[in-house]
Length: 120
Image (tube, rainbow, N blue to C red):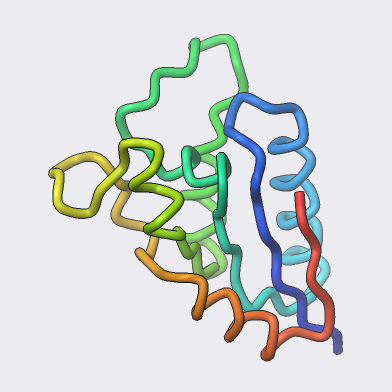
């Protein structure tokens, strides 16, 4: 069975983020092993608990939470990219607790564990 790592670099209000979520959910439901999702560049905004997306728009953060809870999907957040965008693990209620604050070293680990890397 193939192992996949996913890198998300698009912000939560992007249509490509919906594609990323669909891809990950379909893979998980099909029995594909996802070694983790790494949020980098503008993708770190998916972890922002204080983001306010209009109620009639797709709620990416809620979907990532559901996938994390249902499949124990590891969600890694690049802290350097997050801090550049105003997110910090030192501020309460800033980064959602389902996201693990990581560095680029964790991305290297995910790539080493995976047979394939997919970026959105």
